Length: 323
Ligand code: TXA
Ligand code: MG
Image (cartoon, rainbow, N blue to C red; front, side, top):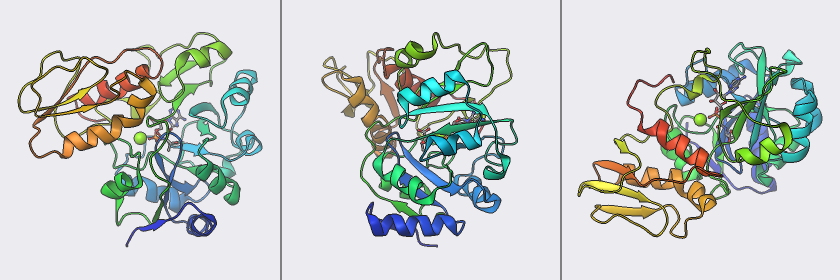
């Protein structure tokens, strides 16, 4: 199969929708990262997502919707969920909620769980495609399982060329890290499963303090266990000195000298810019022939820094991936 590159216009989206209705796989831009879409009510199409990514079947997918009405058909919204959706959708926030109408979502999407992750993306191309289809799209990040998420169509092709029907190319993603995932399936607490493109204080202003799952609890997000979002080269975090065979990922004005190559996430120290550049720069250093390992300076933990640090921490882990 040759993967087609579709333009983000009327004709491109009509073709993308046709492929998806026929059970095909189409990667498309969202404001966070490129997603790999398949309709959620077609078991064969959803199975192909897992196959194309090399994703283990126990890791559930996010159902993307173009309307709140459709979201309310597939998931049960309580007052907290309504408040979050009203404030932040469309946007980089995923809600894990009790699954409602099972006919719209085959069991493979939720990995057989009683909950479903739902999100309405803010990217105009993603919204146009979802609204044209009128059906939810299961869409994990469009990378091979365990690797860094794609923020351009070229990244998608680097991982999935020949394994999917098409990619809609609308240029780089404006946020650059994946959505924040919160679990609202328990009435007493709101769990932060994955920090992401919507920073914690904004969410806490609506639903109060976010809890993190306790270490002894069984993992709720299989995709969040073990090494993940990872380049192939070793990664060292919070460095203040660099070796000559290392590639440096810097942030802000203070850049340790001596690296073979230095890429700066944001010379002005802007965390939004750093999030946008993170996965592209990791890919660049990973591909650089003279770089043996990647070193990263400390990144502040506030705002989008929480998501950036989370991704870097997972990329630096050396244990076996859960995915
Ligand atoms: O920004 C994003 O969220 C992107 C774009 C394409 O929308 N998508 C994305 O999907 O990052 P993915 O599959 O790479 O990550 C989804 C995460 C996984 O860690 C998965 O385990 C978790 O959400 N997840 C999905 N359904 C879940 C559920 N029912 N309960 C708990 N975690 C769930
Ligand atoms: Mg992913």
